[in-house]
Length: 120
Length: 110
Image (cartoon, rainbow over all chains, first blue to last red):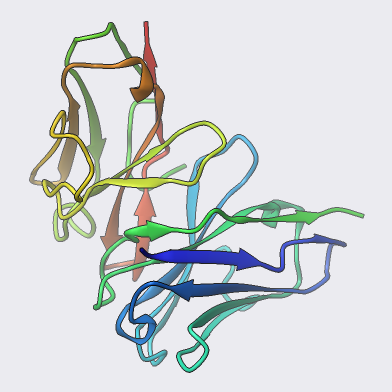
């Protein structure tokens, strides 16, 4: 079974940094594109970032471009999201999600999410 | 403001058929397939429909999807109380080079 387990969510002050991780298992990690999607409290789903299976291609929502960096370590079956210059509006549950073998598709499988709280 | 447009709410009685619409543009649904997700309260989203009309294994055939032009629809037949959830449509957007979501539709089973 596909398993995606996020970690790294925490309380952080505005302007601070945080790195989220997503440990993947149950599938060939290096074959699939991966994504981060977030959901602010009581709000809908918002795409944050995506990365191709090799890591050569990366994609960002305008709201996080220049502040967040997505990366992956295929040898460790792990996806990362480095978040910087955090703002109150970045507060959300962050979901790691597995895509298709090619980029250009929404996610198929989702983790349970990790909560990022931005507050002083 | 979401790129894809969904009605904020929908409702039906048990056994009824309900349809949820999702309106996009030529750069997303018009060019790519639509996906649908179900999110139960307190849970992560779950894939219901992929590539516009395909059901993953384990999803009941009461759920069906369709696409026409720049719009997509999710139909739920034989409505059950456990279908009460938030439903989101999504698609890849060629102009934005990313996934776009609808704002979500809260389905109430009366």
